[in-house]
Each structure stands twice: as structure tokens, then as C-alpha cells.
Image (spheres, rainbow, N blue to C red):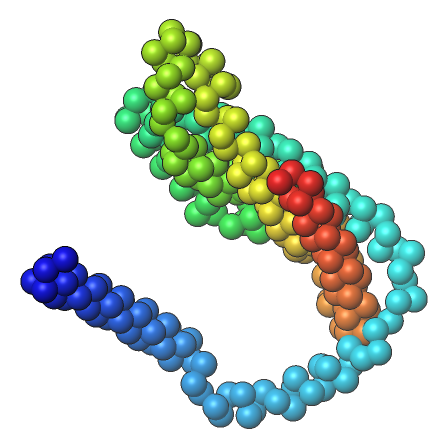
Length: 266
């Protein structure tokens, strides 16, 4: 390698490092500005809020588990909502992802339309969808399931589509050259490559759904969130802390199951 080539490589590497440093500075500046706009650097607010936080903490300790028997069924409903919401999400997300991914979409226009629809699903928070579905189908776990599934379809289908987009194109080309139909290309060349990734995405989303299901009850969509909201309205902060601890225990269990499933699928 000549000295000129070596100097050229060093110069290119220096430019890359400079660009990375510049990008990092921009990100740091934007984050600092966001913290400033939201009042994070207002020390006076923290000082004035300290007594209220101390009072609230004193009322939450020790946790009151006297009504634990009344929380078993809502926790079961929360778990059921998370599983049902995940199942509906997968059923809706996989076909939409196949249409949205550029390498499996029927054409570019259809793919763009589907990606726009998925973005619309993601743009509406679950809590808003929960309110709308409660108004449509009434109180209970069903509106929570529908809200979780609709919102998560926009997110999960996007992740599925990105995984499908980055598959190795050689098996697809070989299947097409062999005269395989579109369906056969998907089932024999696409899905076998991405199934482990799709399983990981699905399990992570189930873990998220359990935490989100706990919140859905606040708007009347069933689950432990309804009990949590009732305790907050009655200013029973010792029960609030007990319910939060119960949710934490369940979340740890669900996360543990999810981790075991991911290890099993590897």
C-alpha cells in the first residue's frame, strides 16, 4: 500500500469520525433543548414539590393487601386481554406486513397505501382507542382487546415488514425461477427466514400488552386498571401501592415467561 493510499484512508476515516461527532453533538443539543422546554432544569419546582412527594410516599407505605382477593379476577382478565390482543395482532399483522414489505408487496402503490394505514394505526394511543371502543361495545375486557390489537397492528406489522424486507433475496429468486407461485415463494422462501425474528417481536409485544392492559382498565376496559382507578379516586394510596406491587409481580412473571420462550425458540 502506497503512502498516498494510506493518507487517503486516514483522511476518510477522520471525516467519518468528524461526522459522527457532529451527529452526536446535534442529538445532545436536541435532547438538552427538550429537557429545557419541559422544565426539567427548573429546580424550584422540584424543591416545592418535595413535601408533596414525601406526603404521598408516607401514605403509600406500608401497602395494604387486605382486598387482594378482589384483585385476582381483574389480574386474570388483564392477562387474558394481553394474550387475546397479541393473538389478534399477529393475525392482522402478518398479511399486512407481506403487503407492506417492498420485496413481497403486489406493487409499490399498494405497499405505500398499506404502510400509510399502519402509520395511522400507530398514531392513535391505545388509551384513546380504548375510550372509543368502550363507547362502541360497552365496558369490559373486549374494548381493551380491540384497542390493543388495533394499535399494535400498526407497530408489529411495521416490524414484521422490516424483517421481511431484509431477507436474503437469493432463495426468493430461486423459487421464482423454479416456477413457484407467489404464495409458495412466501411460504417456502420468505417465512422460513424470518420466523425467529417474528417470534421475538411477537413475544416482546405480548410483554408490552400486559403492561398496557393494566392501564386500559382506567378507561373502563376491564382488568386490574379498574381497581387501580377506584383506589385512586377514593384516595386510598396504600391500596394503590399494593395494586402496583401486584402488577409488578405479574409483569416480572410475564417477562420471565417471555425470556424462556425466546430462549426455547433460538
